[in-house]
Length: 232
Ligand code: UTP
Image (cartoon, rainbow, N blue to C red; front, side, top):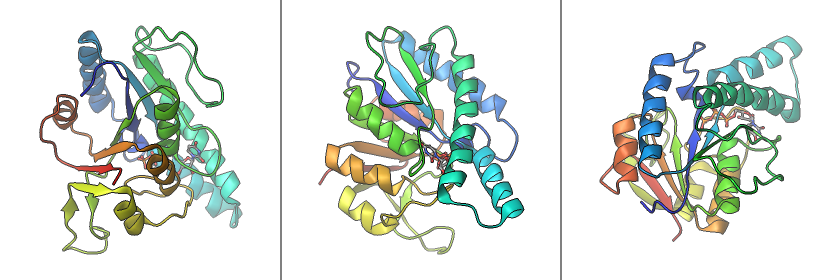
């Protein structure tokens, strides 16, 4: 994969906070891996999601108050992404740009650091969409979406035991599978709002799990496990 362009990683919050507690062991391995890649000349933008932290807050809001607007639920999610992003920025503090991106209208000028950490922006989408905006603004057309979802399947694997993983598909095919509607805290391979923009911009999005060996294969242009969604 071309080293002159930054790699955008949409780092699912499920990898930071998988089930209520922080996965420090995995984050240590991720920290080491990214630093090794930076040493070889790679540059990264890492957009951090909310994980179960977001879902716990969203569920608590709903349970306590009953009906809440999507706007209110999204803000609970956004603040969760910002806390998780702060942890990621802190573990990379000597190599990361000092400011976490959370207002995507302000572009960083004269970026010097090899790593920038970003978080949720505003209601209506997930950090997947933020990742696509970064790709557009910082001249990258590859996004690696790491989360607890390891592939796109031909049907929902939580409902159908015979669901099959797909290795390649186009944005049109992906849209048919996941639809176009956004709902707060939803757990899809890639958010529908982000997919629409990716299609317009001609992005290539890798949907992969958390394995760092697999991430290495993608960066090195080798066979990998997961799905790549591309322009038709
Ligand atoms: P994400 O959906 O991005 O985190 O944000 P995640 O679930 O950890 O990511 P994946 O699915 O593993 O990749 C959590 C919630 O925060 C709100 C949304 O409600 C989202 O579901 N959010 C996040 C926004 O409203 N706007 C943003 O810019 C980012």
